[in-house]
Every structure is written in C-alpha cells, then in structure tokens.
Length: 330
Image (cartoon, rainbow, N blue to C red; front, top):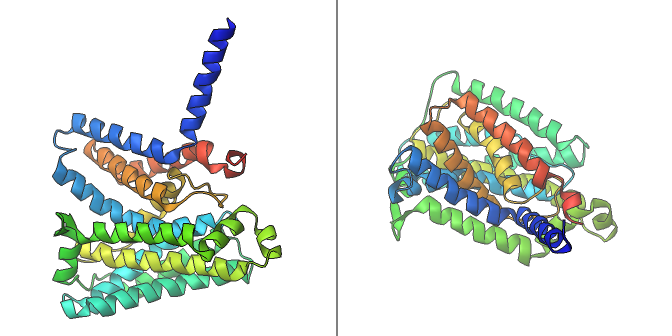
C-alpha cells in the first residue's frame, strides 16, 4: 500500500470515528433513513399526519426520558427502573382525580407530579443515605409500585381523562401542533438551560464526571443526587398524566412500556451510562428514533415480546459505541 493510500485509509477511519462520536447527528440520519424505510414498507408512513402522530408518542417517551437523563448524567451507574411504575400510578391518580371533568385537570397535575416526586425522593434517599445501588433501589421501588397498583385497581379499570386534557395531547393547539409537543419543546428548553446555564447543572456534570473530586470541591453530592431522582419521579408523574390524556383511560402496567426505551433514548442521544457527559437534545432525537423504529416493527407485525427483545439488543449495541463513556472522553 502506498503512503497516499494509507493516508486516505487513516483519514477514512478518522472520519468514521468522528461521526460515531456525534450521536445526535447519527440519530438524525437514522431518523431520516427509518422514515424512508417505513414509507417503502407502508406507503403513507412518512406522511405529515403520521409523523405528527409519531411525534406525540415520542413526546410521551421524551418526558419520561428527561428524568432518566438527569439520573444517568449524575453518574455512579445511575438508572431509574421505577419510572414505569410511577407512570402507571400517575395515570391512575390522574384518571380518578379528573374523572372526566375539566375542573380536575389542575388538581391532577399537582397530584401526579407530587406523587412522582415523592417516590423519586425515596429512591434518592435509598441510593445516597442507605448506599443501595441505584439499580437495586429503583428495581425494588418498581416492585413496591406494582404491588400498590394491584391494591388500588383490584383488577378493575377506573378513572378517565378530562376532554380538555385529551384535546391538549391529541388535537392541534398552536401552528397545527398538539399542546403536548409544545410542552415537550418547553421541557427541552428548560433542560438545556438547567444543565448548561445554572450552578445546579454544572454540579450535575461534576458529580457524574468525578464524584469524589466534586465532593472535595464543596459540591453537596448527596443533595444533588436526591434531587435528580426527585426530578426523575416528577417527570414520570407528568408523563403519566399526559399518557391518560392520550389514551383516554388507564390500563394495567401501561408505564412499563417506557422503562427500557427511556434508557435507550438517553444512551442513543450520547449520554453514557457512566454519566458526566451528554445532554437532553440528543435524548429527544433518540426518543423520536425509537418511536419510529417501534412503529416500523409494528408495521411488519412484530409482537410486543419481539419488540422488547429488539430494544434490549439495541441497548447492548449502543453500549459498544456510547456506553463506555470514560474511554470516549479521552
């Protein structure tokens, strides 16, 4: 091989490495490719109406992933497996508080966010003060929530969404877009400001990068980590409220469908599970990508168990590229 050819090969490998290290760009490219694939498999898949429906579903996932993103950014292999249970519980709380009445929307919002924040705080206390690993703590909390759901529901669906909430989630609100998409955009802006323009955000990245160094620098590590789990629970509670607005009523374990995808969306967006690096913009793109992928799998008649297997395999593949964050920082 000539020197010129070797130089071109090296440049090609360098370009590919640079591309892989830009997960947001990779996600956007994959979104376009999957939309094209979906249109080939089912004409009309990439129509404006269908894309709008996909964005609504992506917004539901994206709201859950916002809290998951914060927990993962905080490092210590932080993962919140309880978000699915919190979403399910919040959907039931919202349905029963509203019970079809618009006057119950505000109390439902307060109740869902408060309930989610409460269970998130329990997670944070268990992880920080009791030194329980996040994976174990949040998995245990998921079991508690699942048991609580059985006691509350007793096998009988109850509660329904208020008409105004359903319209906010599914009907055009501003510039032809439903309210939930504008809510998601607002959350994205708030997350960007929180992480990039506030002391709290700087501290989150510091803890995720090197917890011991952050502690020695005077950062209140325990308080910050508890707040991350609290916010994760609050976002999951808000997602549960929006979910019942989308579905009209709650059904058993509806939130479990968001547990694994919320983690994948974060990693796909460029936030390694080691924490300390990444942001929410990539997570938003990851949520859209996953919803499109799920829609394609549904189009080709892959059942729920098959989709979960594919999502799990996707997470494993993503870990090869983005999961080993310490090496990527070099």
